[in-house]
Amino acid sequence: MELFSDKRRLVLGGALLLTLGASAWTSMEADKAEDATDIAEAATPGSAKRGAVPRRAAPALSLPVLAQARASGESAQPAADLFKPHHRPVPPSLPTQAVVAPPAPPPLPFTYLGNAQDNGRKVVFLARQQRLYTVRKGEIIDGQYRLEDESGGRIELVYLPLNARQLLAAKGAF
Image 1 (cartoon, rainbow, N blue to C red):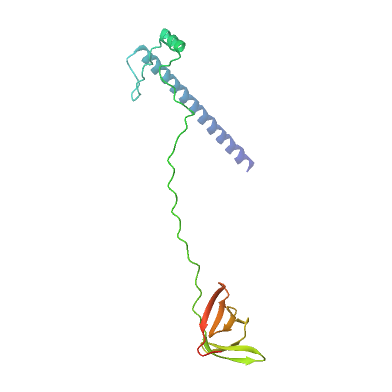
Image 2 (image 1 turned 90 degrees about the horizontal axis):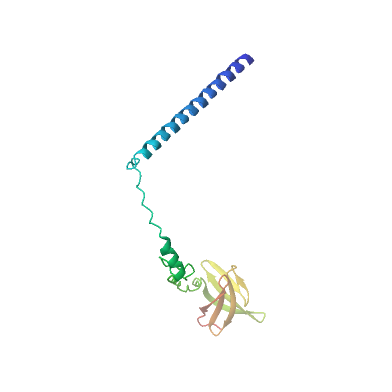
């Protein structure tokens, strides 16, 4: 098995050397071809490489004109003011959102049935669907409503999640 791995290494090493030698030889041939092309183009001044963009000739430099411009403080082209403030238009303001009204409590689910006196305190009888409630002032009903006041033919309940007051008419009460 060791013989096979040594033989394999020799073959792979030889292939690597052949590949490196071939790439070096082709790159030297390409350099020689480019040098020959450059020499031929230099010999014929009017010729240019195919697809190359022709160069523009640089303007002739006139030293007396340059010296005169420096002396008078002028330049051929006025320099742009690099520190000139730029005024950009102000972006339009975002439209303001309409004021959203606070959520309203649901309509009262209770029906007034009557009232009574119990040990000097008023007890109010309310019905909700098939259920009867006996409530005194300050008591909480189903964790959502509190009886706030019971006078003057009206019953004032507070809807606790929104802390909103609601009135229930008491017909012929008190």
